[in-house]
Length: 222
Image (cartoon, rainbow, N blue to C red; front, side):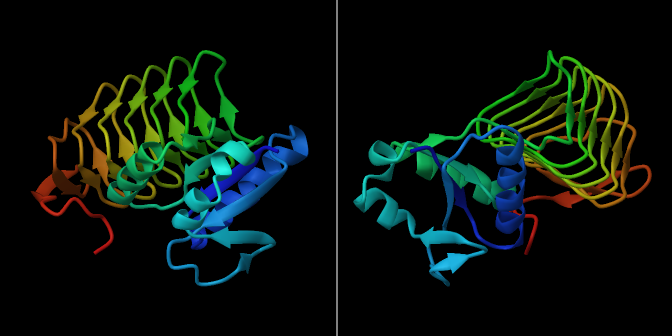
């Protein structure tokens, strides 16, 4: 029995459940999906049962039901921590979840645990690393690399040959110029226009985007 575990049952988690169901309508991959929620606020959400992570371990879900897990939290630091928790416990990340109405070039590489939502365009020779989240209507230009656990928000455009470091967050409707690098753990604010490289561990805002402060606590949502 192939089972998809969605770690996080907030708004993003519910969206990922719908995405998984859309995938299943085209190419049946899972027999069922469950939510993983350590606070277990409900026994069931939108028709999917809810378990704590400790319940999964106690019931040996990975051995009995071919469970693979996707992280459904929009905060890169939490995505990174939960991914490590999942892998350390002996569970596996799911193959990339790619919406049937996303366009992905045949030579693009999308690693395990990553999510590509409705209407995204992933161009030639793009590499999207483990557990990155590409939200709806994002454009990722050719030869671009998106790092682990990154969140690229809706309507963002990454031009060709960009390099986005691990654990970055790019806000809605941002644009990044071709051949531009953004360092690990950096945040680009909503609507920002990035013309030049952004260093590691900072918050950049505006048009053109300028560093406004360090991202010392490595969190987007405070």
